[in-house]
Image (cartoon, rainbow, N blue to C red):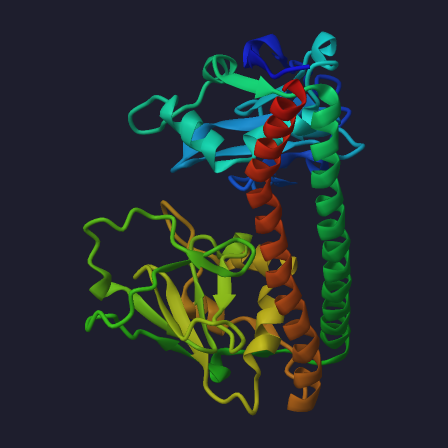
Length: 378
């Protein structure tokens, strides 16, 4: 059986089921990333009317019609559970009558490629915000191999994904150990303000010696900036050096604070002038990794929102940071906890690399499936 070409409108249909009976709660709300992952939503939905949210069932796909630079936020429900997405997003599924033509997982592999992102962004429209519409998606074409070949390559993808997720579960176990130590200290030791242990750093890149522009993600790590740097004067940017912290004072409540630790291959970086950079005065009294453990806690994120101030936008300034109180045990205890944390961060980076490798193999698998179908036809 040879390859077959379809317009996506022939294969897929919108999901229109809503949470009208309020069966699902805020804990069931999910979002999606430009790396094509489903994640717990970062939005505060506690006061929202969840009856309007869309129900996404196993096997359904979702995307955010607003483009993000060169990528589309996308996801696939490969779990056994239903979840909710905001009505601002679009959910769809393979038509029942077309399930003998295309597998949902194979379709997701097709979407999980930079080539598809480029075409989708090309088909997007808008001025201040570009939109990739449902109609634009339906108008796209796809070349499909026979179902048995799709299944073969989907199985390869799922096996790799299962290995990565098993590794990730071990990662979360390490995080629980760290959190357990921290919680025990919080309960059994008095807390003190960290202001006496830290100092703000305001070193500017006026000599233009540092060119690596970084942002801080909500997962408490540095990453290449997503901002358009064309025409930007990086001489005003702040330098972050090893064992220094940087955070976005308007987004620290969602985890945007990071440590440039010793075990990364970056000696220094620059961040936006609006970021706050600080360092520890004496690492014989307070270890950066130990302090970073506290910054990783959800309780800390919530507290920054409570103490933030501002009119148009709440900000958590350096004075607010100095007022943060934590237990500070003997340096040997800090070092023991920090050693576990260092293992956790190392494995976390490996896990991110595994996920990137799985994403990068999707175009190879799609290409292999098409070539095998062509070979069979001949």
